[in-house]
Image 1 (cartoon, rainbow, N blue to C red):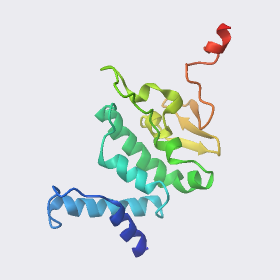
Image 2 (cartoon, one colour):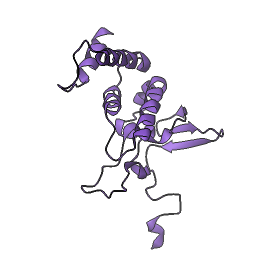
Image 3 (cartoon, helix red, strand yellow):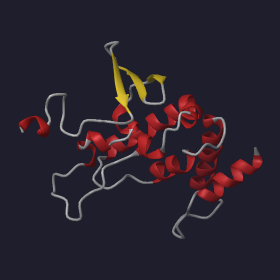
Image 4 (cartoon, rainbow, N blue to C red):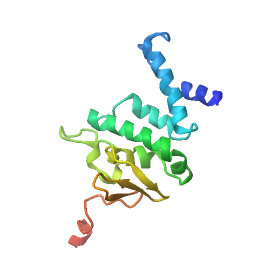
Length: 167
């Protein structure tokens, strides 16, 4: 187990502006690495991506959405990480975001593109209750279940709202 923690420590990048190793922040960072290792059961392939997400809010994403996604990712990976890995889920399936245009409009939000948004951005605090190779079942507060599909997500909205039907 020690070698995995060393790998996790090396995967974490630090700026020269970070405080010294004896600072309270570095102690907290070390505890986060240990907690990640404990939470995920083992160092799976999503750990590095999770650490990158945890470090910095992506451009054109609200801070509240980012913080919620980090919490949802931590909870999901602790419970479903190994199964998602075994089913072939990729980091893009879980963490994915739309690539921003070169000059985005001031109102541009990366989360507005459902077809390119990963599972963690859509959970919004709701738990995943079942996982398959192609879907994740999300429990809503009302008791209803929403199905997130890994593939074939509609880009334009509900079924029947396609440009192909305008021909």
